[in-house]
Image 1 (cartoon, one colour):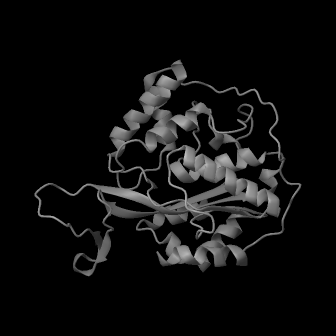
Image 2 (tube, helix red, strand yellow):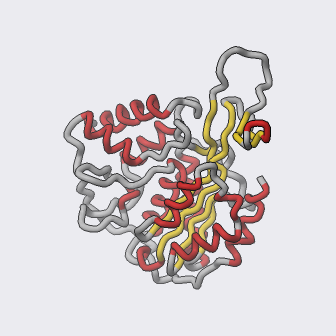
Image 3 (cartoon, rainbow, N blue to C red):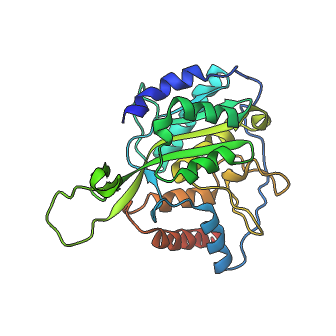
Length: 285
């Protein structure tokens, strides 16, 4: 898509001052203490509050991912990108060849909200979602990190949906074959961005930051909150709960394995049930 070829230009124009001392290059020994949901319903509630479905489907990547990092030192940015590529590859996601056009960005900025607002204004096509409420939620979100994944509706065999003037601009899919069977659809992620406040990166390892970004970008999941929460890398910016994981946890790996297993057109309720089973299986091992 056209907006993907423009990402590198926007990244360059929004580059921040490098901070080579902002994060630690090595992981420290960490004792992870998570609170396990006590029953099936609690586990289901936890999973449901973390997922971010789009029109009844859990979005995932189909095109090769090309991650880049900006805002830290050159060496740190390279290390972050390599780590994100490795996690994606290990999760069964295709990774683009070196020199590819960036479609997933991890950025560090003094003010993540100002950065994301500038990105939206300079590359609006990447944030042109049917539901404007999602964009408002991004710009109004709190905390030190802001995440956006841009999805495109496709049929189960990869035919992209296009706006149809005959239906007031609603997205329609041209079916390639004669059939009375309803066309199954999927939501493909084609662009992602994670922006983290520079101050929040202090004390975090490069592995933690890369794993946080790629987990949020591959799964489009939020952090769990309330009385139950996941022992997940997505919680590294949550204070006062437990020692932060130093890398992807078994919960995170279970989520990624489950999300990218099977067809991308599976209804969200079925995928939630599968996620719950996988999490419970992992908790009992």
